[in-house]
Length: 401
Image (cartoon, rainbow, N blue to C red; front, side, top):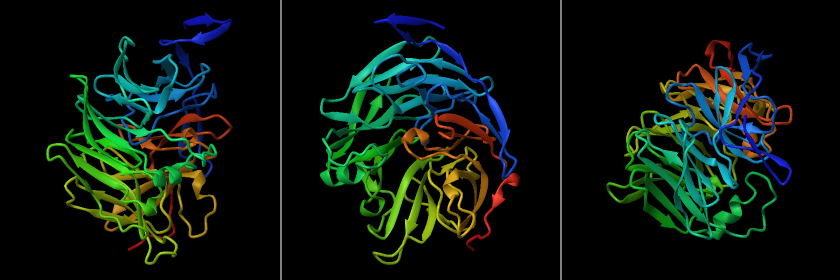
């Protein structure tokens, strides 16, 4: 482990190696094994769950941690808890980071500068800088490792920032900040402007299999925006992938499946003022074909992600009974069949939901055998791994037919 002394303070640096104490337990309700991969040395969590975070050999995951005193990026190995610090600079934005899983390169923003760090030698390079007065959004990378996609959004002074996760979304939506979507050619180090408008644009994802396809969202109250949009660079076309009935339907948490289909969460109601009673997941090809909707017996979980084999889903709420006030404490496994979803409660995550880094944001490991998630149960955010064992889940007492 290396360090520098600045003004009599210890400053841990890039290349430092830590070993977390791995602990294992069985979930009290299901008996599923849950492994805590990090050990309360600061807050540690994985970046946004719709991004590439696990290497192609399924040996480590990209995480962020403030264990050194400031929020930096690390790799975390599954087998022994080894954490290697891969950044040591000011202004690292954890949720904007992404892993090129095949070339072992991490891309991230430090303030307004797009950076990359090679994991074999930890060499860092500046790639571009976004304009002053704008803030970068989340990064994504295609499977070839040749293209990145992201947005940058006009910075605004807001009156509704209470410190909570979503306190500013509504105000930003009505303020209509200028936003630009970028596809970045990594080899040529050149940005291409895909789209721009006076809307709060985020959740930018490039297709894993076709870098001409980018999905992004208009951020804001889900029921008041045409949320999900698709850009085709080869056709220079931007269009809504699913035509949403504003105020009657809401769509969000968009993601690409491994094969390049688009998934999203969905709710609907009959009339304005009614409760949203019909909940489901949508999967659709990027050209709008082969749309399939699956419906939940009760309310939907949050932050759904699909496994690499595209046979099962995961979410970070598990509503398996009609009256279930603590459904937000549990992880769910999801089976898609016919027009409905079978929900199984996998294990407790027990998070507080207080901040983005406490959100579980579950994702499958590349072998589809485990679920990774974050939780601040116990006070500090940590990274956990649970066995994706459908047979041990507690099944919902109802299924829509």
